[in-house]
Length: 549
Image (cartoon, rainbow, N blue to C red; front, side, top):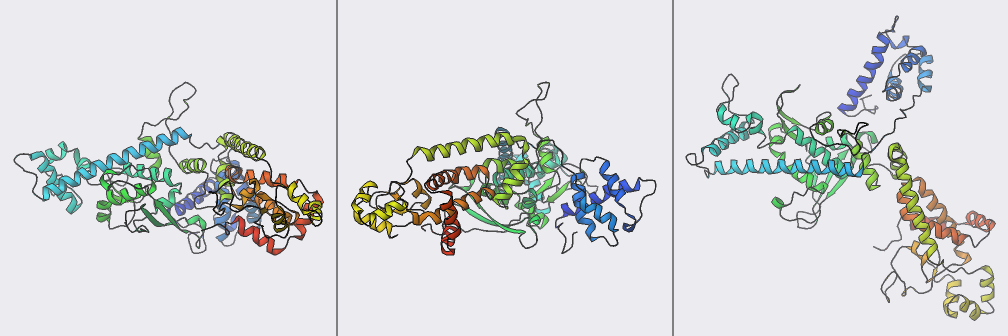
């Protein structure tokens, strides 16, 4: 599973695989006659495991199906039962955070990281002053002592100690906040790394595992030239497979004031740039290029010391240490602590309606659809937007359509047809011969567009021709109109419902009205007789290959 042909490519996913096998093995070990090899597995063993009703069954069965395909000598009976086994997920709805909760989480993380920057910069200034002999031991003995301790920490990654391990100058160390208080004057803490992870998740919408593997390696396309600061990072999303796992992400910053005064931390670049600065000392100690590096103050399972990367459950631990509460109280009216987890990404996707390292179809079908707790609210938003776009399409008059009879009459009485459609004779002739064609119609006045200044050529999307008073449609445009309608409807499967409603609902409604001038048989014939060149034109048009650059 962790080899070249496997799908588990991180330490976390490898350990998860081990835990799944442990759970299954523990169940088998508890049977009166447990199997001792793969060859002794039977369908009844799997059926019994599924009857345990464990909360992780839906994940375990799916994973076992993948894992045991590597097992030698698996009996056909067991393999066939495993291939058919399905366990539905819990019906408990998955709720994202409310927008207010999401903003509180972001604000709390931003505040904590900003406070860490103030503390570490103050410690570095004190160290610089001490080394420059700008701190006088006689006049400011306390600052001088702390400065000497920081100097030792910076040089040796630890406090000065006796051979027994006890810190020297203990009264001064205790007055400065203890061992952790001195060490964290130059280094980030476990809790602050959690705040940084939360903030990056809330600002980028990336996967937790992708951010956990981030490094300091980056490229600055702006070349530090004073424009909008941008950093390009090479990140890894293992679940995309070997060939697609590597992704390049651009982090941008708004134009900002000088570095010391900036720290608004409202942009991914701002957080990334601050982490480069604040964790630099810890990276030097560890000799690592990991973006996340810190000093672990508490004497936990791994003891005190320097660490890099994102620790396991750092999001949950960060959330427990804050005073954040949910919007809704419990049944007794008491505040409920806000549990912090990967729903941060789900909430980001819901708020921004933009895919991150996946397709729009995946966003719509996997992430937004999975957020069943807010599905009704989301559907209402989509319905409201859709109604607004359709109403907007109906509020403006549709573009005039020349019928086949108009085209035939124009041969003998062009003045009459031209007057009927608000054109002059010459413009009518150019329209009929196709010399005024855009994509979906013909433009009778390219320099008189309501979307651009008078006298300048129109440069807006050809979709706006469907609502432009300069546009006229003829039967020769029908094949392209039908192909465009089909393509716009197909986009519903590739885009989120909200984004499709915002961008394509109005032109779809206008095209629907336009095609209503023709019989169903005429529309079917136009679809069937459309040429490859017309199909290529529509594809290029909707992929923005015809946009002005």
